[in-house]
Image (cartoon, rainbow, N blue to C red; front, side, top):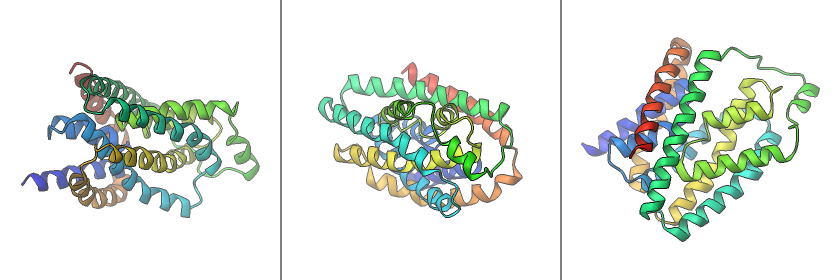
Length: 263
Protein backbone atom coordinates (compact mmCIF):
# COMPACT_ATOMS: atom_id res chain seq x y z
CA UNK A 1 0.00 0.00 0.00
CA UNK A 2 2.90 2.31 0.83
CA UNK A 3 4.43 1.56 -2.58
CA UNK A 4 1.22 2.62 -4.32
CA UNK A 5 1.22 5.86 -2.30
CA UNK A 6 4.70 6.71 -3.66
CA UNK A 7 3.58 5.96 -7.24
CA UNK A 8 0.49 8.12 -6.70
CA UNK A 9 2.65 10.95 -5.31
CA UNK A 10 4.88 10.74 -8.38
CA UNK A 11 1.83 10.86 -10.64
CA UNK A 12 0.39 13.91 -8.82
CA UNK A 13 3.65 15.87 -8.95
CA UNK A 14 4.24 14.88 -12.58
CA UNK A 15 0.71 15.97 -13.47
CA UNK A 16 1.20 19.41 -11.86
CA UNK A 17 4.60 19.82 -13.55
CA UNK A 18 3.10 18.96 -16.93
CA UNK A 19 0.17 21.29 -16.30
CA UNK A 20 2.02 24.35 -14.96
CA UNK A 21 5.76 23.91 -15.50
CA UNK A 22 6.39 24.45 -11.77
CA UNK A 23 9.57 22.62 -10.74
CA UNK A 24 9.06 19.12 -9.37
CA UNK A 25 11.52 19.74 -6.52
CA UNK A 26 9.32 22.49 -5.12
CA UNK A 27 6.53 19.94 -4.69
CA UNK A 28 8.16 16.54 -4.27
CA UNK A 29 10.72 17.37 -1.56
CA UNK A 30 8.25 18.85 0.99
CA UNK A 31 5.79 16.06 0.13
CA UNK A 32 8.40 13.41 0.95
CA UNK A 33 9.42 15.17 4.18
CA UNK A 34 5.98 16.07 5.57
CA UNK A 35 3.68 13.35 4.22
CA UNK A 36 6.00 10.32 4.09
CA UNK A 37 8.40 11.26 6.89
CA UNK A 38 11.53 10.86 4.75
CA UNK A 39 14.67 12.44 6.26
CA UNK A 40 15.45 15.80 4.57
CA UNK A 41 18.86 14.74 3.20
CA UNK A 42 17.37 11.54 1.67
CA UNK A 43 14.36 13.41 0.26
CA UNK A 44 16.62 16.04 -1.35
CA UNK A 45 19.07 13.54 -2.84
CA UNK A 46 16.31 11.32 -4.26
CA UNK A 47 14.36 14.27 -5.60
CA UNK A 48 17.39 15.62 -7.51
CA UNK A 49 17.57 12.49 -9.66
CA UNK A 50 13.76 12.48 -9.92
CA UNK A 51 13.98 16.01 -11.37
CA UNK A 52 16.81 15.06 -13.75
CA UNK A 53 14.85 12.19 -15.27
CA UNK A 54 11.53 14.03 -15.46
CA UNK A 55 13.06 17.10 -17.15
CA UNK A 56 15.16 15.07 -19.58
CA UNK A 57 12.11 14.22 -21.70
CA UNK A 58 11.08 17.87 -21.87
CA UNK A 59 14.59 18.91 -22.89
CA UNK A 60 14.72 16.37 -25.71
CA UNK A 61 11.37 17.59 -27.02
CA UNK A 62 12.46 21.25 -26.86
CA UNK A 63 15.81 20.46 -28.50
CA UNK A 64 14.02 18.81 -31.42
CA UNK A 65 11.91 21.96 -31.78
CA UNK A 66 15.13 24.05 -31.73
CA UNK A 67 13.66 26.11 -28.88
CA UNK A 68 16.76 25.93 -26.65
CA UNK A 69 19.38 28.67 -26.78
CA UNK A 70 22.45 26.62 -25.91
CA UNK A 71 24.78 29.64 -25.33
CA UNK A 72 22.47 30.70 -22.46
CA UNK A 73 22.49 27.17 -21.00
CA UNK A 74 26.29 26.96 -21.17
CA UNK A 75 26.82 30.41 -19.66
CA UNK A 76 24.68 29.62 -16.59
CA UNK A 77 26.00 26.05 -16.29
CA UNK A 78 29.55 27.44 -16.15
CA UNK A 79 28.65 28.74 -12.70
CA UNK A 80 26.05 26.22 -11.51
CA UNK A 81 27.87 22.93 -12.10
CA UNK A 82 31.16 23.92 -10.35
CA UNK A 83 29.12 25.39 -7.46
CA UNK A 84 27.16 22.13 -7.23
CA UNK A 85 30.39 20.12 -7.06
CA UNK A 86 31.79 22.44 -4.38
CA UNK A 87 28.59 22.11 -2.33
CA UNK A 88 28.70 18.32 -2.67
CA UNK A 89 32.30 18.33 -1.44
CA UNK A 90 31.29 20.32 1.65
CA UNK A 91 28.37 17.94 2.29
CA UNK A 92 30.65 14.91 2.02
CA UNK A 93 33.13 16.48 4.45
CA UNK A 94 30.55 17.47 7.08
CA UNK A 95 28.21 14.50 6.60
CA UNK A 96 24.66 15.02 5.24
CA UNK A 97 23.09 13.45 8.34
CA UNK A 98 24.88 15.87 10.67
CA UNK A 99 22.20 17.71 12.75
CA UNK A 100 23.71 21.10 11.86
CA UNK A 101 23.68 20.20 8.16
CA UNK A 102 20.10 18.92 8.47
CA UNK A 103 19.02 22.20 10.04
CA UNK A 104 20.81 24.19 7.32
CA UNK A 105 19.11 22.05 4.66
CA UNK A 106 15.58 22.48 6.05
CA UNK A 107 16.02 26.23 6.66
CA UNK A 108 17.49 26.83 3.19
CA UNK A 109 14.80 24.62 1.65
CA UNK A 110 12.12 26.66 3.42
CA UNK A 111 13.61 29.92 2.14
CA UNK A 112 13.86 28.46 -1.40
CA UNK A 113 10.20 27.40 -1.27
CA UNK A 114 9.15 30.88 -0.16
CA UNK A 115 11.12 32.39 -3.08
CA UNK A 116 9.52 29.86 -5.44
CA UNK A 117 6.07 30.76 -4.07
CA UNK A 118 6.72 34.45 -4.78
CA UNK A 119 8.01 33.67 -8.29
CA UNK A 120 5.04 31.39 -9.02
CA UNK A 121 2.52 33.95 -7.77
CA UNK A 122 4.22 36.74 -9.75
CA UNK A 123 4.02 34.68 -12.93
CA UNK A 124 0.35 33.88 -12.22
CA UNK A 125 -0.57 37.55 -11.71
CA UNK A 126 1.78 39.33 -14.11
CA UNK A 127 2.35 36.59 -16.65
CA UNK A 128 1.25 37.34 -20.16
CA UNK A 129 1.67 35.76 -23.54
CA UNK A 130 4.99 36.40 -25.20
CA UNK A 131 6.08 35.99 -28.83
CA UNK A 132 7.63 32.61 -29.54
CA UNK A 133 9.60 33.70 -32.61
CA UNK A 134 12.47 36.16 -32.79
CA UNK A 135 14.64 37.23 -35.71
CA UNK A 136 18.06 35.49 -35.85
CA UNK A 137 20.00 38.76 -35.44
CA UNK A 138 17.80 39.83 -32.52
CA UNK A 139 18.21 36.36 -30.99
CA UNK A 140 22.01 36.64 -31.07
CA UNK A 141 21.76 39.99 -29.30
CA UNK A 142 19.19 38.67 -26.78
CA UNK A 143 21.44 35.78 -25.70
CA UNK A 144 24.33 38.11 -24.78
CA UNK A 145 24.32 39.07 -21.08
CA UNK A 146 25.24 42.57 -19.90
CA UNK A 147 28.50 41.10 -18.56
CA UNK A 148 29.92 37.60 -18.99
CA UNK A 149 30.34 37.17 -15.23
CA UNK A 150 26.65 37.73 -14.39
CA UNK A 151 25.32 34.36 -15.68
CA UNK A 152 28.22 32.59 -13.96
CA UNK A 153 27.47 34.33 -10.64
CA UNK A 154 23.71 33.70 -10.85
CA UNK A 155 24.43 30.11 -11.93
CA UNK A 156 26.70 29.56 -8.93
CA UNK A 157 23.95 30.67 -6.53
CA UNK A 158 21.38 28.43 -8.25
CA UNK A 159 23.83 25.49 -8.32
CA UNK A 160 24.51 25.68 -4.60
CA UNK A 161 20.81 26.18 -3.79
CA UNK A 162 19.68 23.25 -5.93
CA UNK A 163 22.35 20.91 -4.52
CA UNK A 164 21.51 21.83 -0.93
CA UNK A 165 17.70 21.84 -1.28
CA UNK A 166 16.71 20.32 -4.69
CA UNK A 167 14.71 23.55 -5.24
CA UNK A 168 15.63 26.52 -7.41
CA UNK A 169 16.11 25.16 -10.92
CA UNK A 170 12.47 25.92 -11.83
CA UNK A 171 10.69 29.15 -10.99
CA UNK A 172 13.75 30.80 -9.38
CA UNK A 173 15.87 29.85 -12.41
CA UNK A 174 13.32 31.39 -14.77
CA UNK A 175 13.32 34.65 -12.80
CA UNK A 176 17.13 34.75 -12.87
CA UNK A 177 17.16 34.23 -16.64
CA UNK A 178 14.53 36.95 -17.10
CA UNK A 179 16.83 39.38 -15.29
CA UNK A 180 19.93 38.26 -17.19
CA UNK A 181 18.36 38.11 -20.67
CA UNK A 182 15.46 40.61 -20.68
CA UNK A 183 15.19 40.67 -24.49
CA UNK A 184 14.74 36.90 -24.75
CA UNK A 185 11.10 35.75 -25.22
CA UNK A 186 9.65 33.94 -22.20
CA UNK A 187 9.10 30.58 -23.99
CA UNK A 188 12.81 30.49 -24.86
CA UNK A 189 13.75 31.42 -21.29
CA UNK A 190 11.64 28.53 -19.97
CA UNK A 191 13.23 26.18 -22.54
CA UNK A 192 16.75 27.25 -21.51
CA UNK A 193 15.85 26.81 -17.84
CA UNK A 194 14.56 23.26 -18.39
CA UNK A 195 17.64 22.33 -20.44
CA UNK A 196 19.98 23.79 -17.81
CA UNK A 197 18.20 21.92 -15.01
CA UNK A 198 19.01 18.50 -16.52
CA UNK A 199 22.83 18.52 -16.19
CA UNK A 200 22.65 20.45 -12.91
CA UNK A 201 20.21 18.07 -11.18
CA UNK A 202 21.99 15.05 -12.70
CA UNK A 203 25.39 16.15 -11.35
CA UNK A 204 23.89 17.07 -7.96
CA UNK A 205 21.82 13.87 -7.82
CA UNK A 206 24.72 11.58 -8.70
CA UNK A 207 26.85 13.44 -6.17
CA UNK A 208 24.21 12.81 -3.50
CA UNK A 209 24.12 9.15 -4.57
CA UNK A 210 27.89 8.93 -4.04
CA UNK A 211 27.47 10.03 -0.39
CA UNK A 212 24.51 7.69 0.17
CA UNK A 213 21.60 10.12 0.16
CA UNK A 214 19.52 8.60 -2.65
CA UNK A 215 16.79 5.99 -2.06
CA UNK A 216 16.88 4.08 -5.37
CA UNK A 217 13.71 1.96 -4.83
CA UNK A 218 11.83 5.13 -3.83
CA UNK A 219 13.12 6.93 -6.93
CA UNK A 220 11.86 4.11 -9.17
CA UNK A 221 8.36 4.25 -7.64
CA UNK A 222 8.17 8.04 -8.04
CA UNK A 223 9.25 7.84 -11.69
CA UNK A 224 6.70 5.09 -12.46
CA UNK A 225 3.98 7.53 -11.42
CA UNK A 226 5.46 10.79 -12.69
CA UNK A 227 6.03 9.93 -16.35
CA UNK A 228 2.34 9.26 -17.17
CA UNK A 229 1.41 12.20 -14.92
CA UNK A 230 3.55 14.61 -16.95
CA UNK A 231 2.13 13.24 -20.20
CA UNK A 232 -1.47 13.76 -18.98
CA UNK A 233 -0.78 17.22 -17.53
CA UNK A 234 0.91 18.45 -20.71
CA UNK A 235 -2.12 17.35 -22.76
CA UNK A 236 -4.59 19.15 -20.47
CA UNK A 237 -2.57 22.36 -20.14
CA UNK A 238 -4.81 24.32 -22.52
CA UNK A 239 -8.05 23.26 -20.80
CA UNK A 240 -7.30 24.64 -17.33
CA UNK A 241 -6.85 28.07 -15.77
CA UNK A 242 -3.09 28.49 -15.43
CA UNK A 243 -3.47 31.54 -13.17
CA UNK A 244 -5.78 29.80 -10.69
CA UNK A 245 -3.56 26.71 -10.42
CA UNK A 246 -0.36 28.75 -10.04
CA UNK A 247 -1.98 30.98 -7.40
CA UNK A 248 -3.08 27.95 -5.35
CA UNK A 249 0.37 26.39 -5.74
CA UNK A 250 2.07 29.56 -4.52
CA UNK A 251 -0.02 29.45 -1.32
CA UNK A 252 0.84 25.76 -0.81
CA UNK A 253 4.57 26.38 -1.38
CA UNK A 254 4.57 29.37 0.98
CA UNK A 255 2.93 27.23 3.70
CA UNK A 256 5.46 24.40 3.22
CA UNK A 257 8.35 26.88 3.22
CA UNK A 258 7.23 28.56 6.44
CA UNK A 259 6.79 25.14 8.13
CA UNK A 260 10.32 24.07 7.17
CA UNK A 261 11.87 27.31 8.46
CA UNK A 262 10.20 26.81 11.85
CA UNK A 263 11.18 23.12 12.18
